[in-house]
Image (tube, rainbow, N blue to C red; front, side):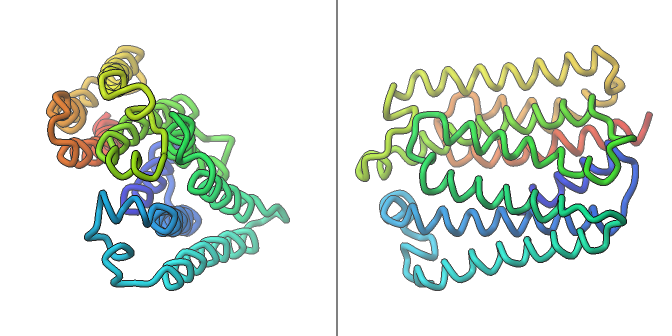
Length: 267
């Protein structure tokens, strides 16, 4: 949730150089949708989590399935309510915010119920959604939106989230196998999955260096990006401790965007 919230806010600051109530509400709405999607995902994965993560609230029976459905629905309704409020406050009669949040909620539902058990398709959809979230603020002012910066950040978010999704599949193999889910590691083995993760890490590093070479950022970008992104990802390279690798990836997600903000701030 925190990463989703900050991603929208920082993307708006980088690409629009402005800050207003719409940006604040957009970040909050996206965070609510992520939370709702995660809760719904936990409901769908209840039998899997009884094996992989028995300490979570649902498998540990600290909350009931009915309560989880209620919380997920309420968070989704709140996010859509924010969209309606933003549309009513806008100077035009469009309902862009409501449609955007509704589409995100629909995609998350399709992922949880249909795509999660597929080989790579679910991973790609989640990664693409994370990248697309950074483009949401362009709705505020398309005329001054920095598409070059926005697409770079969106591609970074896509690659790093795809990396994280595959690491999660590696971590969840035992439970996935018992309930019959075919993820990449189960369908083709751990070795191809780890090769793909390493390829994605290389692609992320190349993206950081290449965009700096193109002068999209100044050299300060790499000064911040290397310790915040490259080194954590390098630490995850052996993939022996999958939980630690996931934590490093989360740090790198936030670190990459913060690096861009700091770089732009000291130009």
